[in-house]
Image (tube, rainbow, N blue to C red; front, side):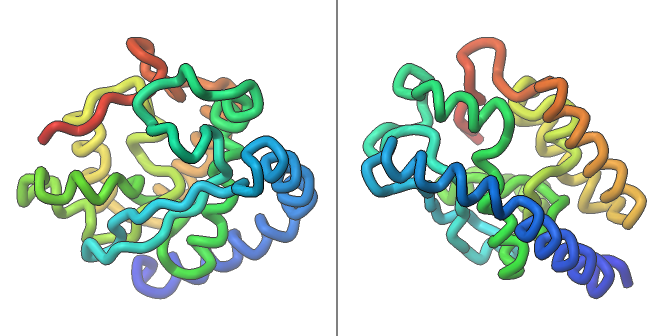
Length: 194
């Protein structure tokens, strides 16, 4: 019952509350990025969601439009700050409000990964993707793909209100301590190869 109605109600309440409370941050960050990235403060990218339906993921931009996510050499001090504090994720509150995402669930990955999934890995799309999830509070970018998928599927199989609350509280703790945000090898997680 929680997965069908309670979770969505919880998401809407949290998203509306978050957007209301964090409005001053949006007002502060948006014009700074507008100037810094020459009129393009948001990063928009198609990502597969529930049942692999593609939606547009929103984030605050942290790198120039023409640069890929392959390295950190082009990331400015502003972009680096947004990533390290996870402030770049704030616009995803709008994705939650729209019903594209939930607060908690497997992170939405790139659409190019879809053909590479095994049938077992594909089960991650049987729930809404999340802003945060079990993989994010258990290593985020510092763990490998196999572990990430195991955490994602563990969440899919064990969803509950209490688990969501636990993940949300652990997420706040991880953001404060900045644990697991970057891959120690190259600054960012390596691309999924199947």
